[in-house]
Length: 279
Image (cartoon, rainbow, N blue to C red; front, top):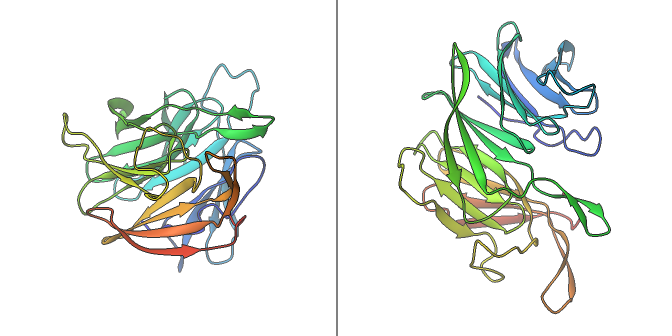
């Protein structure tokens, strides 16, 4: 599966996400979450022609409330795609060929991003980071849990949970080389590597900003990591940056950045900085 165009479409308050899968003609199908209209649009990467528009309606008790689909993950090998709904807390599982709903599972409390282990048919789910609403009010989950759901022809079922030392593990990616899950705390500026095959193993942690904090349990809110992408040798972490105040109340403006890290030990290789409000 190739990934492209992640986080370039902003439709309303939340971000819209794009994923892509099997060839259509000479291109790919792009799956785009339409958060304002509770749908997922499927378009051709050749000319962005609309191929299908899927209504996301996973809760039978939402009484007309928005479900707000946030992310899509695709399993090309087994023929499924998945969507997370922030407001209703469900994960939906669909057939890749007919886009028909197969099953849904209530994770609860604002599921955010998704990552797939196609070989073992596991879906990993992060939870929404707090979203600032102004006047020191936050909206969003502050859980420290990554969910593992198993899936197959019968649908979705919970199979594991991973508890982290930090809250708000929003960014998530699965590594097909070592079989690890990578996640980052949006609030604590820390990266974690989870081996899902070791039941009693602790995650490995790495600070994204060691000059500021080396404790994963302390909120920092300086770099604000948002998304992770995995290459067979490297890990890429996008960080929002923006305004930040230190413990003395001194305000600083942090450029948005992408950190390139070694996939195995998460050591830093390179940082590319954007503008302060690049997001």
